[in-house]
View 1 (cartoon, one colour):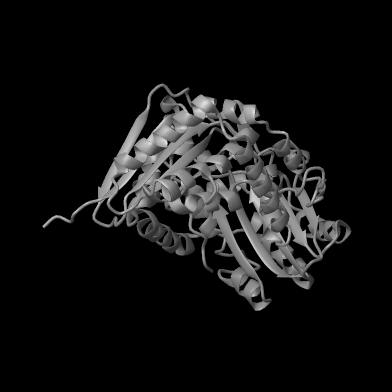
View 2: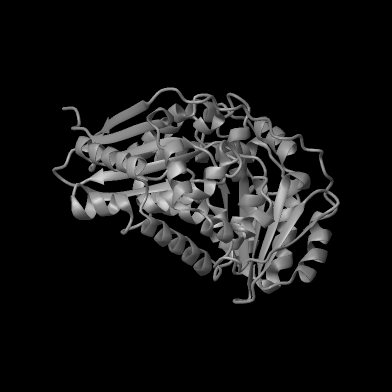
Length: 457
């Protein structure tokens, strides 16, 4: 099984990653007033929330299950535990021993994967529609019957350690991103990497994983999303059959600390002989749908598009096309986190251009936006791009499953997701300007600089 990378990605890829994976409302609907997903929902007696998106474009189905637990829910000193358990979920039960889950999915022509975030852990399979019952049976079985012994858990810990080494410790951009998060969040666990700190990963035990599994993996702490060529009437009896008998555990509500209001501008710099091209980024602590001044969340999505959403965006046009200072430039924003998010800008200098020149140019553009406001035509283009992305996403099965699952797992109402296009369409230029003034303040920021370093002789 090929695992999706959990490590931070290079700045040039972050916008795409955030755009496709971490903004469920982005793909919720199409043009204003026209709901595209039209999900059907029901809840089992044991608390499992079920969302069904009927889509008969291809004779296939996707099952995604989201557990409302992620890296930010780990106990102090146990960083990386949520990700470690994600790996161990493939190690088998008495009915389907180690490796059998993945073998059966592959044997039936399916694909599977899993992912860990700060706020949730997800698992999915995509198969032909007549194999839906199989994947429901497999996933429900490991929700409650996972068998963890040292014989299977200890070797997998070595796999997790090697993943950390290869994807983070040997990747200067990932290391710098990790340190940026640790500085941006002074108190909140979002500052701890999803993969975990190496010394704490090495100390994780089989019993740590078993206790975490027992504490968090239960139907009343999960959201099940089924998308594809099925109806809710076909899905309901199957979900009842395989998940309905699993008892609820009375999961306690999340307990999260609050991030204090930032008071100082911060900076992180790193040089490495592995770096060939310098990179610059700046992350601002930002509100979202659930935390902080949440009324800015929709305007911040538009602002991210205006500043850095493609070749017509302000930063790309000014730095890359007109002034030829950078080879890339953009922005990204994650509105779906449970607690305060990041709003980030990034750029890579062209050959012969210093990081300082690029930073000065970006500072000039930010100052101009704050003083003069955003261009109304740019706001209109941003809205059009967001609505187009929503329409195109409907053709696939996984976009809907992930979009809705993330939203519900984060505590949002499906009606909010379906109302997204109307709310985006209603964003005014004045609201985008207000959001920019609220977030783009030096004291809310961490600037990160990555530069080449000549190897020591």
